[in-house]
Length: 118
Image (cartoon, rainbow, N blue to C red; front, side, top):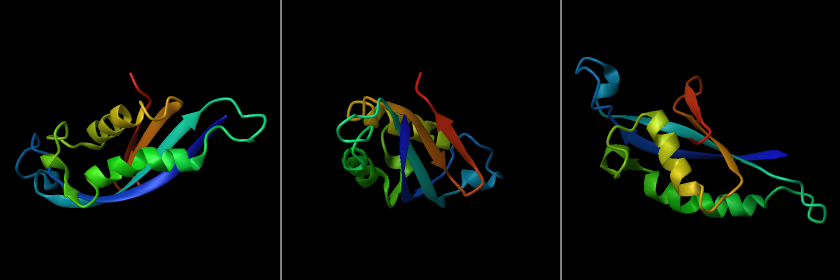
């Protein structure tokens, strides 16, 4: 069984490896949508895979590190593409959520990426 929870964060970034004339080379902001997917067996007593409160607790420090920040200033996100952001989030969530199977990062309502670990 697979469950997921949706989160949002507001952050600024610039993509430093792009040509200067590319709009994403300049500082700009996104309202990111983040979906955290966890899978595992359905607990026969509780009737769930994991408590959504556990996902929220794992997400809370990550949100605090990213929300309303310039992502380029965060170690490991010097080139904060959505792909790098998904990997960064995965690496911090995985210890707290052993059933983590997927991190989805939406940088706009139409564009995003999916990371399923190495």
